[in-house]
Picture 1 (cartoon, rainbow, N blue to C red):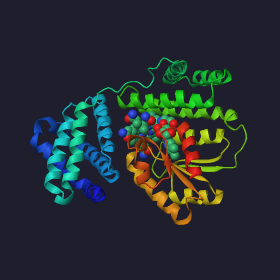
Picture 2: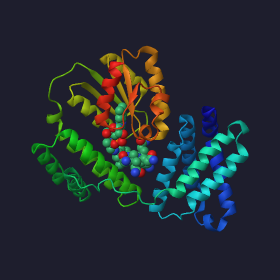
Picture 3: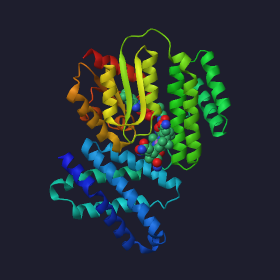
Picture 4: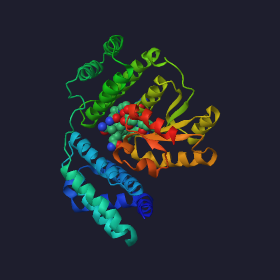
Length: 350
Ligand code: B12
């Protein structure tokens, strides 16, 4: 049922979005007309995104994938100085258009998710809290690391991390309590329009550079003989989280084959075969890439059994919707790199 509803929304997304925006422009000509043709096209594009997330939530049978996305849009639009009524008006019009145009057998289900989205938008904050507010020792380091990067000073950023590691802070602590949090904070600052795309790219590239400096500490210790392949699905460009997970496994003696962002399924599965990998770990950050995770697992299962290769999945949408990993056919899932190791132990013992 949810799959049918999801498919209906996906297939009709561009037509529905055009209709939604046409109605809004007609009803509120004075307010919206000033944005011109460019504004109209951007509104259609944004509405297609709202519908894509709605479709993913329906397919996963978990409204959180849609409601969390809308809470995120609210913050983004506030940062861009949009009128606070833009999103609620668009959602109200989506409700009207969907009520009129989708077949009756899937309508109630779709409208229920739409309604929870509307309520979430009302309640959601316009300014999400900082990820770096804590008062632990590593919170201070995280704040200083990010301040150096936002200053454009990657030399200082690198020096403070290397000094911390030489002083006894573990690489795992640096990853989980410094890099992961500073990267989330960078995302928040971009989202509220406080830093530019260039600053976000600089912080990300510099963080990857410092991660590379830590490999003498990562490639140590006893090998276990276990092998894992870590990949992000096609189109997925967020690869730092996946790299962190792979490095945690490497530090525990696994042989890891990290192939990173935007990977064609065929090539990932070829690597799994060639390496006879015990675990295939798949990462997705953008919710609209979850379908590809399911497809990759389906393809893998045509040639390799669970006893040969276990599948772990993770990333933002899996953290939002706790049952999603089972729906895509994975054997396990974890919310971060540390728990990914425990989860691998669990699935290997099954
Ligand atoms: C850096 C970054 C980028 C870079 C990525 C470069 C790179 N080489 O990785 C670039 C510039 C490419 C990018 C692009 C985009 N991004 Co971006 N990006 C980020 C940012 C700031 C940091 C990502 C990161 O490094 N996180 C830190 C890691 C450590 O965390 P993580 O990925 O969650 O990983 C942990 C867990 O999830 C888990 N995990 C992850 N994978 C796996 C796999 C397995 C098997 C397991 C078990 C566990 C696991 O373990 C990891 C380690 O603990 C985030 C902010 C954020 N909150 O993360 C936004 C963010 C993810 N991006 C966002 C957006 C919107 C985009 C774009 C759509 C922007 C645009 N308009 O183009 C595009 C989409 C690109 C695409 N098609 O993939 C939004 C997503 C919002 C949403 N609701 O979906 C975020 C949240 C920013 C924000 N606050 O608005 N982005």
